[in-house]
Amino acid sequence: MFNEPHNIAQNCAEGSLKLEYPVAPLDHHESTSSAATAKQRLENAIACLQLLETRQFPPEYLASFALNEIFMAAAGCANLPAVAPEASQAAGRMLRDCCPIVDASVNKEISSEHLYFHMGTAAGLLTLNDDPFHADRLAYAGIIAAELGAIHHRRCLRERDFPLFRDARMRRAWAAPRDPDGTDQ
Image 1 (cartoon, rainbow, N blue to C red):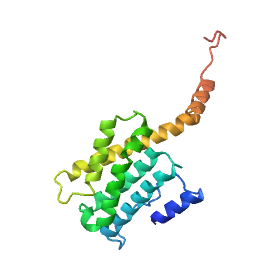
Image 2 (tube, rainbow, N blue to C red; image 1 turned 180 degrees about the horizontal axis):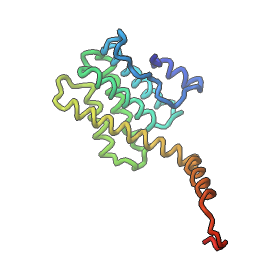
Image 3 (cartoon, rainbow, N blue to C red; image 1 turned 90 degrees about the vertical axis):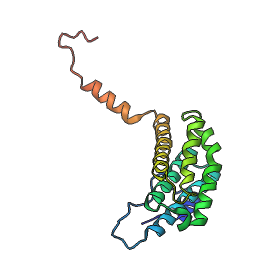
């Protein structure tokens, strides 16, 4: 069901970590409590943020993944500091600490102010009880997670020179009707 954080780190060390979302969708009919699920998601976020030190994966990818985990934990459990105080504190500290690394990696594709604001609001999900802005913090965390993920995936496509797009354009060009009088322009 869940990839435990030590498995993520172990898979990274073995070179077998697949860059995909490792957490299965939750079945709300399971007996797993929302508190246990939230704690597991925070541990997944911590494991991803710890991987920043290995420099084996792009920081924006790892931050996006961690932010998604924090988003899901906070969406399922509004009071993370009460449910998982140590994990909340560690994830919040690590999220703040990774901001300069992610900022340098995205290289102005997202402004520093935008990045720090959104990641700061996400860190607020890990520290505040009875927050009147909880829904807003969730939205900002989701936005920055998506933006960082999009940067990573665009870079992957650019690095591969957009092979699917090029293939589709070539097929369309070959399938285009020819000028019957032979004077193609």
